[in-house]
Image (cartoon, rainbow, N blue to C red; front, side, top):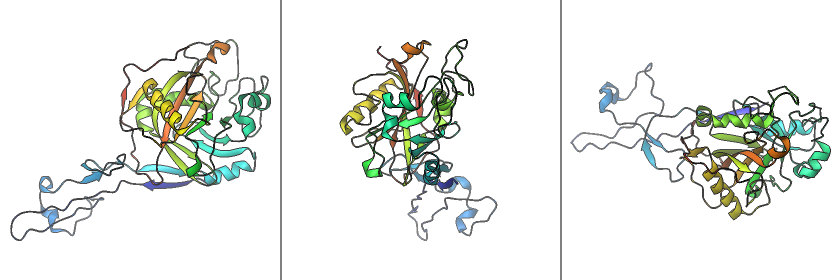
Length: 327
């Protein structure tokens, strides 16, 4: 059972001091209601004379108070129990990834035998029958599994890899379709598995989906998206490795911002940030299966502090000149 929690931004109202005899400070509730009369004498005042509501910027660590409209509540998720349940089916499951309004609601394999591409191809990426996380066949060119890089560390929040990388398949086919040589391979936002990441190329979708939700058996983590981009498969430093240092992880993230289709104006990267990197195949540059291995499509987020205040939307603008893959 998925447990849901709701967090709302804490409203802070400054006291209003009126410099005349007999005046007193007043406060206003975060939840005003037109249907219930207020017990405060200020309710009789015209609306435009009352002090405005003040809010803490949910993405500003300094907690700067700014005027604004009370944002909607942001729904978060607890998948710790789901991970435990999935492990009864496949003990190689170690985590769960969820992206709202996509089909990415998926157990993540964490055994080192899947995180190495050579081992994965021998076990789960069979040419004749790609298997899912339940070890069930999904057919030729099927959806496959999502799995962590073999050097990923998810033991605890303090031990999370600076660059936590998850690989997922994009078979270039409509959802439910297995490989057919007569059908041109395309990046379809409604396709299977990580093809769903292409939804983030839509401005409205990207604006209204600021977070990636990642869980282990012990804890839930929220990553705030800061980059959506194409890259060459082997950049330096390697975006695809969970074994890189903290400093290299920051370099990867900064390069990701240069490549990103969107500029996430409300995300400021800094030393010590930890990242979640979702990587998949792309056919945007070629439909040749072999040549396609030279390119990747990536969505990245940075880890938010525990109990961070959340905003329901991302503030994005179109990147006028994203860096293109150099192949």
